[in-house]
Amino acid sequence: MPKAQKGKPAEKVVHPYSRKAAYLAREEIRLKKKERQKNDKATRLSSTGEKLLWFQGQLDPEKPTYTRKDACDIIERYLQRFDSELEQIELMNGIKGRQGRLHGAREAVIKQTIERERAQYEGVGFEIPDIINGKHLKTFREWTGDLKKLPNIKLRKVSNKGLDAKNEEEKHDAEDEKEEKCDAEDDIEDDEGDLDDEELDDMVLMSD
Image (cartoon, rainbow, N blue to C red; front, side, top):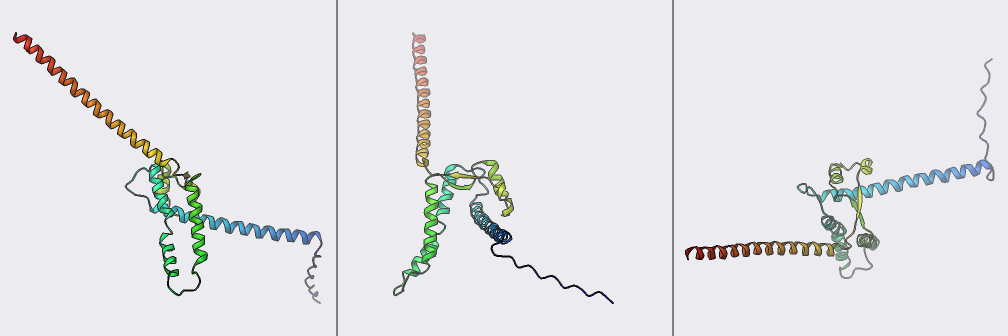
């Protein structure tokens, strides 16, 4: 006679206060934390990718190099990227007879984001792709938007602190250089005039 198949043994119930129960609870917490970190990382990468793609779209293909002032000009445009959306929200909320404020949560998030980014830009520096370094700029231009290649993109913090003073100093230096050049030309002309007078005196002597 064929042997009767033994049934699957019933799973043992884990006692809620046993070491195994404590281990399973810790393992569940660890897996949830790992999944949350993975999702947070994916969100950060996606957000960073969108930001870098925006900056890449601002690059002039005919411009081989960028100065700090050029970078600041692009950052200023980036800080104004929500202007049209805020205007639309303001228009919708300006309609007569409307009760309550529409898109209030979205408006608050946008304003907080702009305030935080502006504080970074005017303080420790706002992080952007390094377009000032020629080698890093070339790598950034060639980036296709692949998030896996993000580590290849070099970033740098750019602040507008001291930018106006630096531009003013460069302007004064250029003006001083121009004045020095003009003075040098005047000196040359004076020297030529002096030589002409000397030659005239020699001619008078010779005629005598």
